[in-house]
View (cartoon, rainbow, N blue to C red):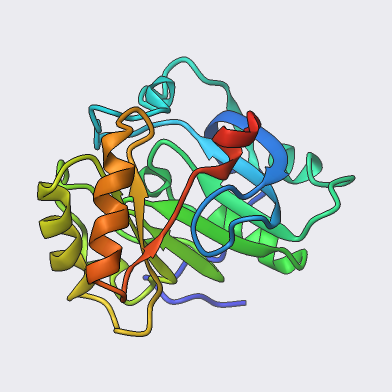
Length: 212
């Protein structure tokens, strides 16, 4: 098959490598797909540096082993779900086409969790867009959004949330999620949603349950 200069065929690129923090089978704990049986692929690397981040160990790529697409796919053989969530860190630091193209060929539903801080790559059925005020957002994300999720730590975060909400269609689900280490943020969100019914509450139910 002939390809144009600007198009690459990743369909058989099983040797493409990613720095991998972990893979695990669990239940999605937050957002639109909360409660769904899913398999998580957590990639290393992040340059957003949220001060309250609960995955700071993922920021550096250097300490994690490289896994090929084939290595990753092999771990899916006996997993009873078709919902695959690629998360991080910030997954868009990597070219996600090699991984997602293979997953799609094998019939999996692909789901990305991203801050949108880098150019969009990959073939995804759903995108959880969780922008942060600490990092400029790449414009390629806005026509890919399945849901908008904003972490609320203080009142200033509501201003940021409303600015980002204006950049996506009105019918996209919009969530406000408390900053886990700040109990006051739950009350802030509760009161805000009572006055702004277009927003929904997202809770990290996996943390309440004590699971990943």
